[in-house]
Amino acid sequence: MKDIKELSLVELKDKLRQWQHPDFHAAQILRWIYQRGVQEFSQMTDLSAGLRRKLDENFSLGNLRLKSILASRDGTEKFLLQLGDGHLIESVMIPTQARFTGCVSTQVGCKFACLFCASGMGGFKRDLTVAEILGQVLYLKYNSQAKNLTHLVFMGIGEPLDNYDNVLRAVRTLNSKDGLGLGARRITISTCGIIPGIRRLSEEKLQIELSVSLHSADDRTRSLLAPVNKKYPLKDLIAACQEYIKKTKRQITFEYVLIKDINSSLSNAQKLTGLCRILKTCKVNLIPANIVGEKQIQPPNKLEILLFRDRLLKSGINVTLRKARGGDIQASCGQLRLRYEKK
Image 1: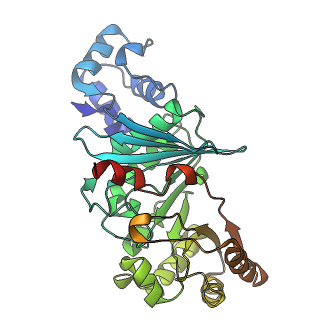
Image 2 (image 1 turned 180 degrees about the vertical axis):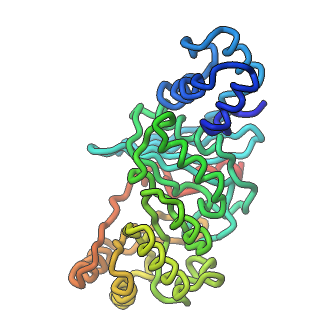
């Protein structure tokens, strides 16, 4: 049975007209789903009994099932969710004093095999549907300890711009006043550098945040860390980022995972400074690598991290150092799923 979250407001109105029901009920149905988190059509008490029965006969409200949950001492929660076909995905809730950030997956597995990431170690299986993406967001909002969600990042398993159409349909529903009503500037899409997707996104007229996983400012090292660089090298990626900034008037964030003995030296920092100066409108988010035992990935020591950050700051680069979250529960993307699939 089709998950009703696959339908946009317009599509749901069309279905109601086919059933000879007033189309204003479409907005009511979406508000029940996204703003009240109901799990049964029978709970939609401002709809007629006949319409509720019709909905129940033709649609479902999703079938995500909790497989496992890990809770960190810092409040981070990682959910391993099972899809209707048995595949596993991860979603994470990261609470802080000021915000509650959900991190969701967009694919089962990943094609892009970044060196430091566990997401693609089992290979790519398939894209997530619109309903599966939205289902994760609702699961985090209504089932996490926080019972809240103020920000959303598409940084879980998979490459969002490789599942472009489904991700953008989900974003529009989340942003809609009849959906979750989440402000566009509170939604971040992260990409490993899919240039056609970046260009498409620049035409969407959405004020969302874009993060680009950079990890190195030279092609040799970046190709080692993110093999997608062989197809979309730095020169072309930076040109696409410049075009994006010009069209959207939005700043881009470069995500930079610091890995011991690979990309964390002061010379690496100097190269990154030069690249950032080309763009002018960007910021850098430094992320000490999570330990991924299967790949022998280690973060630099604290002093090396701070020296790298300070070199950027002294050069006038807007830089933040991400506070490690969920380290005691293996919060690195894909690790929990990988552990279960090895059993």
